[in-house]
Image 1 (tube, rainbow, N blue to C red):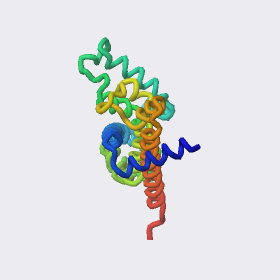
Image 2: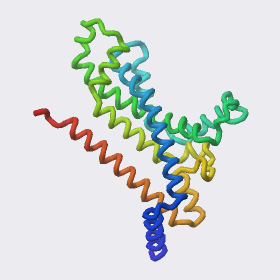
Image 3: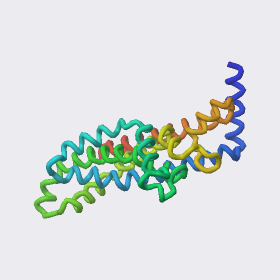
Image 4: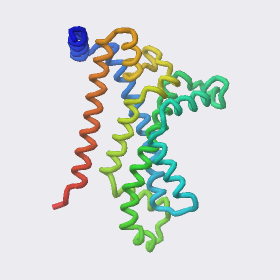
Length: 234
């Protein structure tokens, strides 16, 4: 217990003085995860809206697949991406392996189904209410999807925050394709695992405190936005 207390005190001191290693790791984590969440959002939100506004053979199977991918194991994503971008893989010539770009793709692949599923649920409800009017006006599927997305800013922000929360907490996939290289691909989650194994509990705890704080901020923001969106308009 004394060791934990000392490590916690050192961790807090590192945060307060802005330790260079800690700041660099947190900065990289934020850049990678925000980019990945944005990638998942740009691809997932239109997909969810299109699935709400269109009917086609196999649509049910696509919806089942998207919802199943919500529980996709990160190590599977990491393995598939590793095979794709490794030197002998079909995308090996791009030189993505062990780079932040590969980490963004891995986290984006995990974020995309979250955004698509949440966007679809929101847009499906809106389509049930306004779909007939849009069809009568002769609005095409793509235009209808854009209208549905424009009608749901708060749920879409919540979807983005959920995607970011999923990305920032990920470790397995980015460890496989990023390599945990100091100063280049080392994020909060991979650093926590590494420093714990090394016995540097102060840095591990410091990063853990920052990660938990970010998670709480994201959760509180998502909850607040949901409450505001659900509040009756006066």
